[in-house]
Every structure is written in structure tokens, then in C-alpha cells.
Length: 432
Image 1 (cartoon, one colour):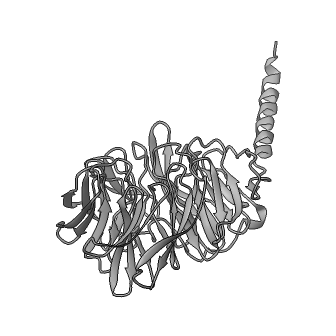
Image 2 (cartoon, helix red, strand yellow; image 1 turned 180 degrees about the horizontal axis):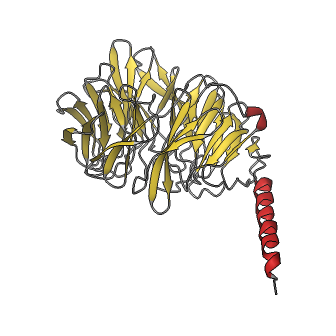
């Protein structure tokens, strides 16, 4: 029988044991893995908003801005540059396996800059490759049943990425060591963006619910958390610099805006269906597609509805905007559509062979070349095509598998992370 006077002492001992266990788990030694090492590694179970960081990285100075992020920029324009108009595309190499087909959500896309290729997999591994396809390092995120699905944000020194274990990581680009990490919720499937040294992240909980968070990229400190969204947030957030607002969408069939300074809600609007991928911001307009097959636009400052463009099928794609902002492209299960963003007219469509296909859920890229805007996307389930602005195919190449993320252009090459067991591919644009 426990005496009453011993209860405080017992409570203190239990508390000390818990703190000691947490400290033991917080040692990140061994989280980085050299090529060839396939040992599973124990991850760190964090409490909400508790940050672990290496002492040497506690104040790393302000980042130099993102060198690579999902959809190209904080507004998620979907634009990427190319030095000319190629005549052909040729496969350079493919590395398999990468993904194994766990979970039906959109897969992680490659993040690429001059230091290498960084990509997550649905197995829980996050990897760096050099441009020859040689693995440089890998990092394992345990307790993540669906692994990595978000696309990493890169700056001068670090890789920032969220995992389906609810933890957001900052990794050293050279060796994959953990600079800091913070447990934000139960899952992170959307992709972050960086602005003025801060990261903006959509977080999910199993209830189901979700929220947005703003994090200091230097040390992982959480600056604010938005109020609850009411359902899962799969849509990658986007920024309007002019309005100072961050936008996202959720499974509540709505889109919303919060103040980028403090996370205060500004407006919420009906989206007609679940919004799953990225929002797109152009000038003072926010665009999003939803599961009801309609592309919608909203006033960035007020949330007032503007255009509704029925496209058929289901939209699980981000909009890509032309360099002049007059038109954009988005894909549904049925077609790749060219849209006049001024009045909502469907200018032209490329319909996929075989009709509606639920496996087609990638985000097309607006390829900005000298004197021309081109579109990079699928023209069949396993065929990558480059289109001109009249929806004519000017170059194409076969793929080992389809993909559900976005292509990433770097130099004269494009990198793709395939669904299923298709692996990571490098494809070269050929300029005759």
C-alpha cells in the first residue's frame, strides 16, 4: 500500500523517468544513412511544437531564400524556365525502386538545385542523388505509415520536408543530418513554401482536422498556428505577397485565407468539393480546383467568388499560369485544359486516350522558353509530352510508370518521381 506522503515523490520519479526517456529518444545519431545501409532507424516522438535542434545549428543565420520549392514559388505559379524549344526528349537514367504504391495520395516530386536531387518516397525514406543518379545519402522517418508525400523546399544549406508522421524536418544538404525537427501533428502530406526566412506548412490530425503553421527556418520555432480547419488539409498553401495572406483548402469543401503575420483567419469560401492539391495565386486572384470537377477563382483579399469553370472529371491538380498571366493549364481525369484566366473560356483541350482515368492526377508545368510558353504534362498514362500553346505535341517520350506529382526542370533535364515502382527518372531535352 502506498502511503499518502509518498505520492508526490512517486509522481516526481515517474516524471523524471519520462523526461529521461524523451531525452534518450531525442538523440538523432544515426538518422542519416550512407548508401547501401538499409537498417530501419528509430525516429523521435515529439510533443506538439517541441523542437529538437543540433546545438551547433541553433542560430544558423537567415536562409538565402528557396532554391527549389513545389510549383516554383510561394504563389504556386507552376512556371519553370527552359533555354529554348527542344525537338526531342530522351531518357538518361531511371533509378528503381523509389515508391512502392503505399497510399493513393499524390507522391513527392523531386526538388532540384545545383547541389543535387532530393526526393521523398512512400516507404519512409528521403534521399539525395547526384546528377549521375548516384545515391549520396538517405534519411528514414519512422512511425510514418505512408512515408513522404510532400515535396521538399530547398535553400542554400538545408532541405525542409514534412512526413506522414506529423514531423517537419530540416536536414543538412551535404550529409542529411538533422538540423532541427518539430512534431506538429499526426501527418503532413502537403508541401511547404518559404518566404522571408519562414516556412508555411499545412498539418493534419487524425480526428480528422488540420491547421496551418508558420515556422522560423533558422531554428524550427513555431511562430503561429492557425485555428482548426475542421477537416484534413491536403492542399499545399500559397501566398499573396500583395495581400499578405496565406491560402489553403480542406476536405470541408472550402478554401480559406489567414494573415501571414499572425495566422488570424480572414475569410472562408465554398469550393464546391474537396480541394486536394495546391492553391495558385496570380495578382489579386486565388485559383483552386476541386473534386466536383470545377476550377474556381476568388478575390484574394475578400474571398468573393469570381469564375467557375466546369472541366469534367475530378480536379486533383495545380493550375499553371502563363508568363503574361492571361491563360493557364490544369488537368482533370479526362483532359488537359487550356483556360483563359480573364474570362474563364476553355481555349482548347487535349483529351486523354481511353477517356476518364483516375490515375491521371499530376500537375502540369508551364515551361517558359524564349518567346514561347510551353506545357509539360502527360499525353497518355505513361507518355510525357511537351505541348505548344495550341495543344500540339512537339516532343514526347515514354515513361516506365505514370506520375502524380509535378515534373522538375533543371538545366536541360527534367526529373520525375514515378508512382508505383517506376522509380526516379532523368529525361533530357534535345535541342537540334
